[in-house]
Amino acid sequence: MRVIQEPGRSPLRSAGIWGAAEGQSQKQRGGGGKEKDGAGGDGAGQKKIAKKGEDLKEEMDSLIEEIDEVLEENAEEFVKNYVQRGGE
Amino acid sequence: MQKRIFGVETEYGIIFTPEGRKTLPVEKAIRFLFEKLITTEHFLNVFLENGARFYQDTGCHPEYATPECASPRDVIIYDRAGERILEDLQGYAEEKIREERVPGKLSIFKNNTDFVGNSYGCHENYLVDRDVDFYYLAEQLIPFLVTRQIFSGAGKVLQTQDGVRYHISQRAQHIYQKISGTTTNDRSIINTRDEPHADREKYRRLHVIVGDSNMSEYTNFVKIATCAVVLQMIEDNFINKDFTLRHPVKAIKDISYDTSCKNKIRLENGREFSPIEIQREYCDMALRYMEQATVSDQLRKAVGDWAEILECLEHDPDKLDRKIDWVIKRKLIQRYIKKHGISLEDPRVMMIDLQYHDIRMDRGLFYLMERAGSVDRILSDEEIVKAKTEPPQDTRARMRGDFIKLARQNNIQYDLDWSNIRLGNLLNVRVICNNPFETDTEKVTELVRTIQKTNLRRTSLSKLVIQS
Image (cartoon, rainbow over all chains, first blue to last red; front, top):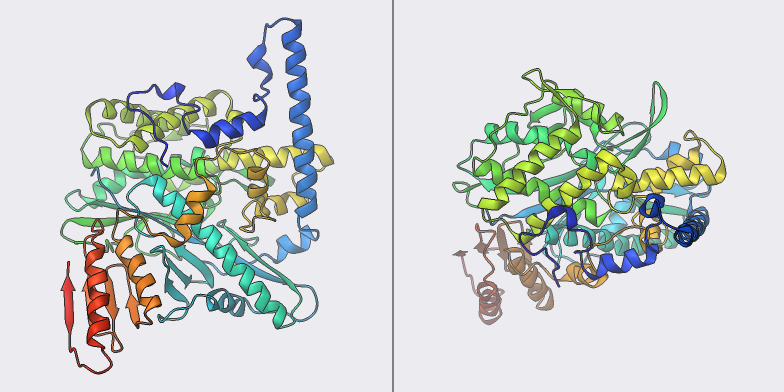
């Protein structure tokens, strides 16, 4: 199914109109966690932001761990040997 | 042109890393890649059931050209399907390599540079109106193409005289000309190759060879769709500002070096603008253009994204760390460096830069981020899987794809190129289709039926040419 923008919609409000795929990934992100989103909020709000920040950090930590699992072990050797003939 | 044909050609990097003393030449690895493709065509040059072409290109690179697509979204679906097709073939080639008892690892990368400074490309093709003067079109388009890397770049960790630096674009260092006829040396922004694979009196081909190969669906879509909008404005004579750059080739490198995207570059008329400002001029023009012209929904969507991206680049580029390849990769590297307390010079950083583009789902770092939900998607897995075997339904590729399926089922000899189908034992029956918008598969079905009836083995059907 194609997800397309309705004509005439303001470009600056176009976030989220990629349909299901984006909605889903935004959910996974857990709210984005940009500190300044909640600037000037009350105590509870700030706690929530700190919590978000922690979630995001955990998410990143586990991502880095996963990367270390798959990253080529002999990085230096591999990168230096990665020589191609010039293409187009 | 409101209706346009799009196509993308992607050259892949390929390397075999032996684990012992025995190694395997890359030529042989590529032959293994092609071996699985059952075909009656030439070896190392095959049209696939989805209408795409897969072949070995200059410098021993596997290359995949999407079928003719009628929209930017379709072309990125088929580009992505190409990654999956190649990954399947890689799995088969790995089996063959095991059979040969050469221990080691085969890797394929969708990037544009190696370690010592060789480049291989990602070429975009746009069908354009023959009536528009090519050099006028190129001059209007070049400032856009030079500056668009701020959102279309794939990012590159590069060793320079000042040490290791993160650059915006993979390809920028390998561009030496504004416009030229060659693609291997003196690479240019726009190539003059004019093979429209269509009615030459009506159309010409615009061959853009300056772009990076993109992993992010979002980046890829915005790259193609914004270029299509700019082209449409040029064809409609809507562009009324002159952005001609004084030194476009130098500018492309300077912009790639400047991750702030705010350093000024000089125009021919002496004025200076940042790449963000130049892009914003094009984008504002597109917003005005859309108020009065007929523009497809996809292009409207892209212009909205474009405005938003430029806003982020101006104020907070990190906001694009789920959408734009060079920002996604930079953020990943920054986090990795921080976590491990290493510097940009660490070989692991170079490896991340490379492995971001690995096409194997279980090794590629971009795919890993995609699975973790760390990047935005615009396509579904279903439509990508479908595009591996089904041609686009609204272009000539449909006839080609359907023909290939039929011919294979019926063991019919054939030979193909973009606008011709030749078949029969002597390849003496020919279907010409010069109109890339033509989708009439009846003609192909009818043809195959005729062939089956007449049995070309016995009759000497000297020459049957069907022109559509």
